[in-house]
Every structure is written in structure tokens, then in C-alpha cells.
Image (cartoon, rainbow over all chains, first blue to last red; front, side):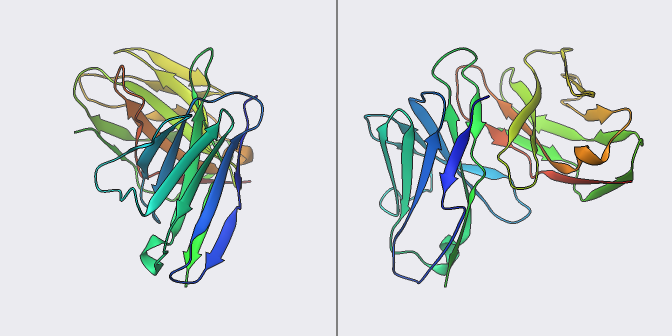
Length: 116
Length: 112
């Protein structure tokens, strides 16, 4: 099957620091990846669409300078939360869209970020 | 805009019970509808989907029928197992648009 990994699975950082989250498609190529944010008892909210070799497309209300996305290869996208604040604490989930076949999105297990 | 409303959980059932998780949607046009499942410690997995009215998606004993007249896509299973314990998400996507709109998720626990 198609597997997507995220690293780290959880991270704690201090206010004002930056933290990077990696999303990898392990056994398929993904030109397009997606980053979601999930608050407790709420649905997944799409933050941005990441395209290999080009700039990410951010959803309305998402600060592009706050959430930096880099999609440097067909199997790796990174999300960097810059100058993190406690309100950035959340569960971040990525998905990767397979380049062939059904173009289905495959989801990573998520990263729990806690900013103290 | 698009929205998905699904049954609030948590839902607890005994093994072999009948399951229904309600999902209704609001969307422009004719969206595709999905159910995703998230097992503990894992990513969301596509459980089933339907792309047009009256289509029935099915997988692993679960079924859902795309009802345009009631804008619903309720998930059902006739006899649940302990291994079905997970969080279930209803979602939709418009044709030609990659963006998935999710419901809030329903946590299902099956007790032996």
C-alpha cells in the first residue's frame, strides 16, 4: 500500500522558536501534498497545498510567513512553524496525492505540536 | 461554501451491534463523498466513496449511499467488531478541486 510518514510524531517547543515537521511518501511519488490542522473535537482544516518545485498555495486566513512550506522533492514536503506561540499548538496532518492511478490522497499519522 | 456535519461522538456499541453514523453535507454542484477511518496511531485511510447520486460505496462490511435528495451519506455496518474501533470522518470534494472538506469525526468504540 501507499504509506506516508511524518516526523516527529510529537514535539514540544518554547515560544519564539521554530519547529520543522516532515512529511514523506515512502513508496510512491507525490507532486502534490497537503497540510492540515486539527483542533480538538474539530475537523481537519486544510492549511495549504504543497507542489514540488513551486510555491505552496495557502488557504484564506493562513499566514504564509508563519507556516513555511517547502516541497523539495517528489517524496518530501516540510512545514516549518516559525516563531511559534501557544496558539499554534495543534495536531498537524499531511497527505500526499499519488501521481498515478486513482490520484487518491494518503494521509500521514500526524504531528502533535505543543508550544510552551 | 462546502460543509460536512456528522454525528457527534463518542459512540460505544457492543460487538455485533448495528452501526449508523450520520453525515449530511452542504455543497455547490455535485460533490464526491467519502468516509475515512483513522485507527489509533495511524493516518486517515479511505474507507469508501461515492461519486454520484444513488451510488453506494462499500468496503469491509461498511456501506454508505449517496442521497442527493437528503444531502446525506450515512455510514452503516450490520455487525460491528472490536477491530472497528476508530475515528470515522465524513468528507466531500468537488469535481476538479483537490480540496477535501471534513466533518468533525466520530469516535467509535466497540466493546466485546
